[in-house]
Image (cartoon, rainbow, N blue to C red):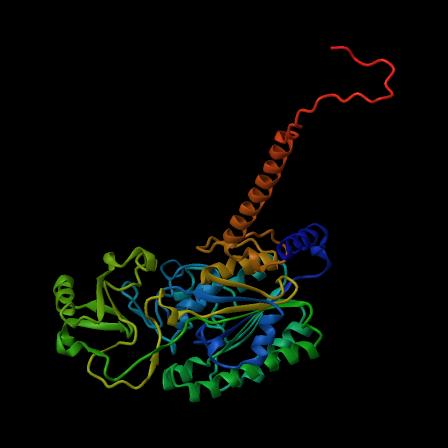
Length: 451
């Protein structure tokens, strides 16, 4: 019954809504390194209230490799890393001899293989974009930045970032209808303490939860809370590391044979000598990492068809760390196989575009992009996402997921079968035969029958 009512209301909204009444607004928020199961492990009242008032995707399957720059760009382009070109946190381009790192990321050369949503939003004339330190937003991608943006600065507090975003959303000219907001935690602490250090991670996540409360209070105070759509998500999760789980490359290959472009737990290797020779040496480095020639990388990773992906890729098993010979300075890390639950973030959203109290098990993070384009009324760029994976989150979409569809079909068949059986039984029902009895003559009959 509740499903039928939901579908009915969705149909009414879709048929009777007036999209032209106001410009849809969307705020995309990322808390870096927020592992999906943190929601179940810790008491986070502001975030739970946000979820109850909207929708929750319990686990988001992110893009491989599960690192920060690549996944933040996948979210806003809907593309796998091999397609958008930000294939690692550290990159090298053999043709131009250019390098990319988190401290050297402002060259448009690295970003121009894709068009992020903040550029599309401004190109299609529905409004303008703003950003508080989302990776890539301070770069002129396809000759454009968001109309308003903050250049990345780790020391700027969350509250300052929120105040800027809310100011731009509330009083800017032209109207800002799309904005992004980025915060480094709980990633920084996840690296430092490891995700299983519940005492320290609880303190960090309580602060993150208070940030959600602060964001809500500022949006309410500015009169935006009831009209804006807010998505809260992350780029990746976090796995526990240990000094006892090290893969030491110096023990099996001399550094003169290769250059390490990107580091653990997915390491990019540029051979200086014969590629096959280097590959064979690396294969002898132990049983806790996989060694792939570029052309051997599994298709499910969507991580093969880009020249910035190096000729040899090393993928450590969960919890293991690839080093040359250095000691381990962190107790948590990410980048591992994106099929691992420890690498998965979550997605929560609320606002006029989203249902209330709906929960879904999973989507892919490339599915977020077409959903955001739909909310903003944009024609999306070519992408790897699937809009139908997010339809059940949205109020204006007709949605029946597979289990519900099967349940409805079975229910209808049972009802039809029952009615058919009743009709058949009714038609075939015959009155039971009456026992034979001889006709009795009454004493006052004037004309008795003669037989």
